[in-house]
Image (cartoon, rainbow, N blue to C red; front, side):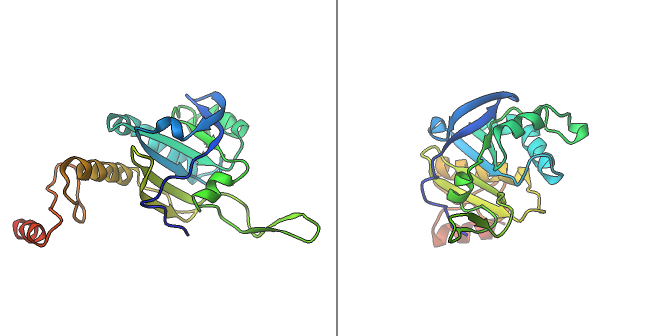
Length: 209
């Protein structure tokens, strides 16, 4: 599994569904340079854990937006599949009401670039593609700063849903560090003290806690 933290987030251009139903053919990551981005991958449309995550991000969308964060979802399904799922009510297992972009990584290149693609593949002697598993994405999440650099990443196995509040906490941590030039200790939350990156700063922090 590649560590992308500290590196430029892989760029991409792909179809996506935006605003809950509008299909665009050339959705790019670059259009959000100058904003923070939370890019998260999920395995598959029309499943069980995935809609709970997508709705959870939607429920917290105003909190992300208040922090100048663009939320983007991505799976290896087609844009048509995304669109169909968006027409289904939540009570029926659908994701109607989701307004942030959902990218269609149908050719698997985005998931591969972020190293969250499940399974390995090769071409046999007949030139046929052979895969060792269903080619879908793990539950990867990447926090990208305003300069397009990955500052945080988290990858869960398929059955393990994420904590959206933790994603917000990491945004707050990054913005605190950028604003104050201090570092965030364990279990830091917005409004708490940071510490300076020195022996004296750590000692002072520990003495006061």
